[in-house]
Amino acid sequence: DTGVSQNPRHKITKRGQNVTFRCDPISEHNRLYWYRQTLGQGPEFLTYFQNEAQLEKSRLLSDRFSAERPKGSFSTLEIQRTEQGDSAMYLCASSTVLGYEQYFGPGTRLTVT
Amino acid sequence: GIQVEQSPPDLILQEGANSTLRCNFSDSVNNLQWFHQNPWGQLINLFYIPSGTKQNGRLSATTVATERYSLLYISSSQTTDSGVYFCAVERKGGSYIPTFGRGTSLIVHP
Image (cartoon, rainbow over all chains, first blue to last red):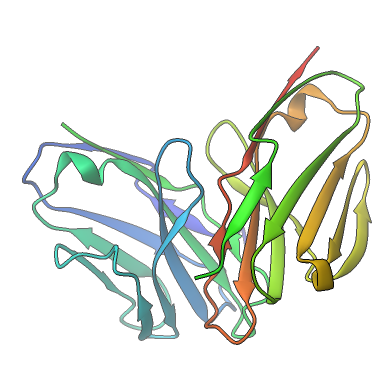
């Protein structure tokens, strides 16, 4: 296993367009997390799944954001009607069900023009 | 929610110098991790250390949970240590959601 992977690594889109990001966690990890990171800040929690169940969502996750993990393996994060304020690094992490240590993917950098 | 403060915010060192980074948190914690974010944005696990002391090569960390702080020591720094160091904690009794500090940005000059 090569760790957590994310695709694409970079995405440039025009305001108003929809984008979708994918995260593939470490294979034996039940928990999957999404974070957003802007310049000069630490990662901010967006949502997390245990297997296919979405257990927590941050108030940062507006109605334009939706995340899925349909078979408890990979996850997708979709942003509809993107805004310039959505420009950020979107990070995915996974952990075992005990949640002790999280392992991060390389991130997807989104630029909304 | 729990507050996480890291200090100093910025640190500039010459290669070979030692440094101490600090993470203060406002509540009891179940878990604490230190990460290094490299210039390409990848977060790399350094330590899982809710209490006690651990060492890994030139890096070591100590968490004093009763006093609500953790320290990361970097000895004989190298240019490859440059990047941002984050502390992330999970509040005791909370859900499994870590809160990150704002990080310490480290630049090591050759």
